[in-house]
Length: 297
Length: 319
Image 1 (cartoon, each protein chain N blue to C red):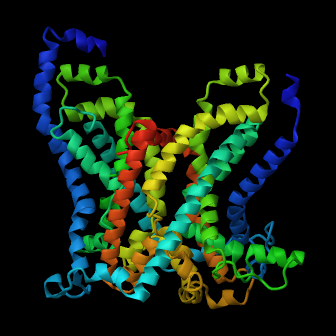
Image 2 (tube, rainbow over the protein chains, first blue to last red; image 1 turned 135 degrees about the vertical axis):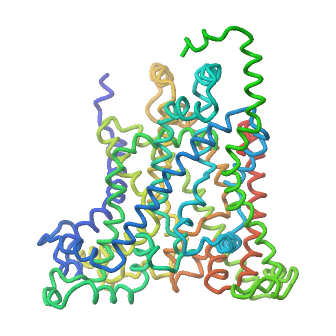
Image 3 (cartoon, each protein chain N blue to C red; image 1 turned 90 degrees about the horizontal axis):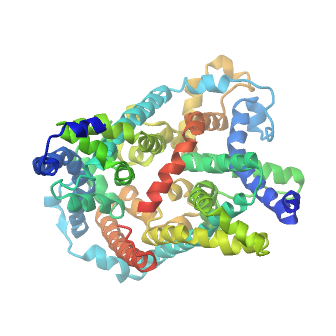
């Protein structure tokens, strides 16, 4: 069709608008990155704007000399891996259980669960409860409260309902118990939705910030997000770190001497890198996830 | 799998019934530990509502705290200073939520614009990069904001200074100008690409024959968008609109917490941040809990309202 090849004014505007917004979305990532790998002196004077200059990687070496940062990275990885694994298994299991009509009080318990998505007691009662349960300054506070997630369970339940019942029934006839059916038959069927949940849950754990803010004062349990937040807010703590992290010899060399900006940007990039690395792989999964979620709300 | 069925001699239905009868409590028992967790983290905190009836301080046990009845509740609106404060916080909450609802059409427009792009490569590129901000934390967004807009050596200020458009750097982050709008725009920056995914999927679901038929009938591009694409998206839009009504007063804490500073506090303090500030920062647990309770009750009301609307509009409930 001749019409298809015409590039109208609308197309020009459309391409321009979308290009500008896309640039606005990725430029901050790029801008921070080029500042972390450039001469720190130029960077701190605001001279690194569109491309890196005098490339060096000392900032990445320096931030890992900051006391506590490696530990925080470890804590963050641990909560992400353990938290995600438990959440995925629990979501799979509960999503499956709630498709079983014969479960005692199924409708009631399902509502009992789903209503918590929309209604909560509020921040202070939640905080006091966590404290009474001994979940302050406790690694479990990062894991246990997130194990049961109504949204993920809805996703799984909807997905299980779309798989053929005959498979489960024939296994029943062979005498398989519920748990056997879950592990051997249901789990392999629902891997696509479990992949989606793994991604959502892992990103959520990695990005979680306010549980540390409320529940943790012990610096051994700080997470990367929390440390980044502190660097953004407490100029003092950054200055302190700068003193500790670089030896006296380094201080003479302005180009690689850590600055508040270099520490902030470098930690930011470290926090975002894992997300960027897994992003291309999980991109195809989340569309499916969000669609199922939307249907059921 | 069908060989499994073949082995069954007779009465498969009866056998299934027996299986299900046995399963009744077994299934419940498997679920029980998880239901206990739900109780602990979502229902037990409701007990904490009694703190709103006491003059409670963290170090002193509740039994030794002064019982004040409904004083915290009446205090919210009884004296003038407090009333003004509540009105300010409510105004912020309503303004930011309303702007959020207004901007909720942006993802729709974005999806339509993207649909009109013919190059698949460009389309995928745009989608990939615009969805990315959804996956970073608000702390990181603030870190970006700081680097881009800081008063000394922020990218935007440096650019404008170099271009000669301004003489003195603008202090965009620590200012109270257009705080509501700025918060909304950050929300758009972070959520637009992600929000569009569902509409893009909705558009993909539209029967292409409709477009062909319209073209045969002489409908141009804009007529096709208006008469086919838009109606195809509307049902999805309604679902999300209803959900956003249910969450009208739940702005969340993260974004406002990280962007708040002494300069913009009076306009950025939404209910969630206010509860944090009086409760966690000022240790006025009783009053903070009272405000929390009011908030929970109002959002419960909004949930039922949204649910009712959903039933009327699409004949299906959201809970």
